[in-house]
Image 1: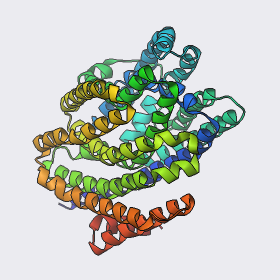
Image 2 (image 1 turned 90 degrees about the horizontal axis):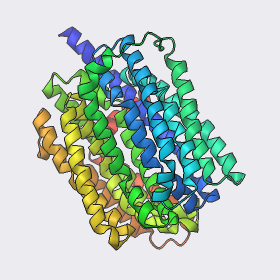
Image 3 (image 1 turned 90 degrees about the vertical axis):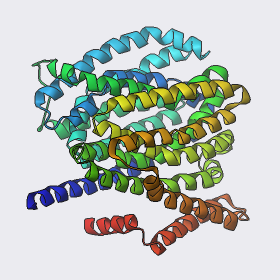
Image 4 (image 1 turned 135 degrees about the vertical axis):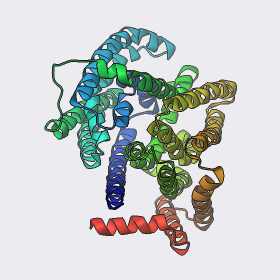
Length: 486
């Protein structure tokens, strides 16, 4: 019993540290993204962002294909060996080399589809990013498996800082969309160097190549691969369709709105994602304990996600106008809608991690395939009504699809919808009420800067006051952990 308690405390402490460094990682990285994003958006046009934005889906799908779900596969192995990591390392390099050659010769076809000849040269350069990333996937898997959250935080910060500075300098010197391209390629290159630095003494690749671990992981990992591609299409299908049917400036406005939305919810989902699968995988054989941990992570997600995303929707107008200027006005209504959907995105991530940690990559795969097929049909049906209607339809469907994930979670660990609602609805209703009150209390303020500051301060204080009055345990645990770290 004592050993069991010790192991429980060890896992609890590891989870707390992972969440802490996950929060530091997500928060600081998104803060840097905020700074670099503002500077770049002031220098570049919506068309510049549109040209690079339409290539995102190809780069991400290629990245899915090269990793093939082996990060999750290695994480689910109790004690992966050096040979397991080595096999993934060499497989990724071979796969990415083949993929880059295919995409290199597909560049003219991509340029034709999006009616933009400049995409031929640009895409061939941008696609170098996923080729370079293949050299660091096994190292990333090692850090992820061993919950090296602090090291992952430092890796992201260093890579983003240096690549962001380079992008800003190039943009200020008139390099337009090439500044965004160079930023993405340099980010991956620097990230790999940092990963090698943190893992070299623990594990490094050798020339002893044995692909038998790939064959053992394949049945699990291939389902993760298919689902990752589906998720990539799901997250970028709007850009892909908008890029074909609308001018590049319209693509740029949507890309800008989606970027801020993604940055915001990634701060929350990134915090959870660093620990969810590794922790849940360790307790997958104890369904009651897994259920308790899952519910706690859901409460933590709701505590952060709803006020953050509803708050960004509230201040979208003044935030965009003050930071990147009136040339981006058309992205404001899109951002407001996307933020509402973004408030629920982290729950989607939690459900997916639950399925993966339980070894049910089949559930993970089929739920996502069904979702993207229905979403594509919905988008095609609404595209004639304009971008705004497409975004609203896409957002509503994404939120409603959580019911399907909840059904699967009930099958996996027995968690009921009433339990999930009890864990999350109080935070959603509190955040929504806070935003309504804050809007009414500040709508008469004429100054954009004062309005933005007032809304942030009032909303934050009101939400924290409600949490304190309600004696929310998640808030108390966060405060206790922060005091302990000090």
